[in-house]
Image: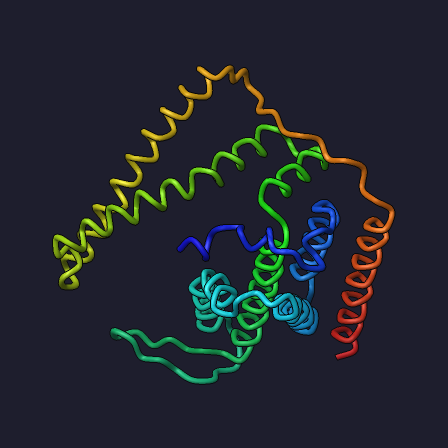
Length: 260
């Protein structure tokens, strides 16, 4: 769980670790936006392949990358299934389930596959960004881009206490396991419900105690965040070249889609 959510990989020295976080953030957001606006599978496949190739070239553990990419897998499968069975068009096959006949269509398969590729490509970019840029540096970059300070401060607190709540949940789950809380399907469901409720109560209690501690330490509505130095010209050029390359790839993919 620590490897899955922590950003300790970002402190490894590699070719991207020293790049300004603002440049990395701009390139990543550009890639994600172009993927979302793409009308064909070519660009999502290209960007996903480039992100995975970069992760492999930087020698990040394959199991950690696979685990982080598996998080939105349920969403991808759900969207693919919904599109497959709810889009009208030429029938591919019919699935009989609990007295209902679900008809899969060729158009639904095409639309669902495109949506799945978009999600996979965007997730690949986010995983790469999360493994080459520390969270605190990204939050400072967001402030530099004039994102409202209140949003950034809430994000900082959320990121900090995600790990506190994960520790609490892990301890509670261990205690439930020792008491045979996950022995059998019915008991497991009850244990998961109890765990979710307990973690929610703990999160509310933690929020109250954190707020009181911050006030006692002089919190007056804003958190001190160090300013970023001016971006070096070399990294500005790196950012412009990559965003231009992404733009050209988007235009080429869209032109190919129009010709089809």
